[in-house]
Length: 290
Image (cartoon, rainbow, N blue to C red; front, side):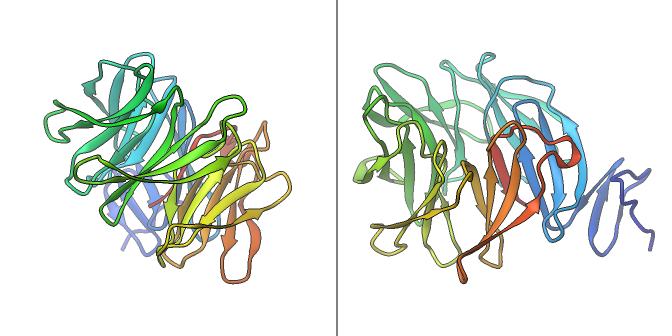
């Protein structure tokens, strides 16, 4: 069997024990993907070693998610469009355009795509047919005058964070994942403009990164009640993702360069996985485990 090059290049499709290659790109089988406003960076999920990068052909990326198809889906805010990319870096073009500016994306249990929309005076979440790109209408209307700051589906529910404004703290809401009906306001005491996309641990525990603070909020996986903050000086968590072993990957934004820390819930320790500036990484918005 041929061996893939460590610099992420290859002339033909191939596979090896730790790397998957397609076309001219090789990616670690277990990879961390970091999405900035203009590029995607890939790192080995075990060692944190830089693997490859590719530019996004569109600037002003708002939201991003990895779809069920294994592709990267991103919102381009000013163009009011949703664009797909192969993880090798190839652009798959515009999937659909949106009537309003969109920031956040998530795929629902029904296979459809959900996007936040900057409607006024209440931001909304719209449902989009993931095959045709056709709008299926408004799914959720948010609270008055606060922007959506992240969303995730889990166990039949949609969990949405709202940024809050001024002295009004950020909040976390739970909605029915089928109907969009509000189930509960779970929390309303985040730092204003702080809470970003929630993530669920393999054991069901809910975590919310609170940007512009040193905190990651932890919620009981059964009761969904706030438990405590996981805090670390100069953390400033922007985005989080869980590895299969239960460790939490934290994209930290102390500026001007981001890093990825690994948090172990079992012993409560942080270790650096991706160092600041590795592979040319600057400030970024999202971290994913592939």
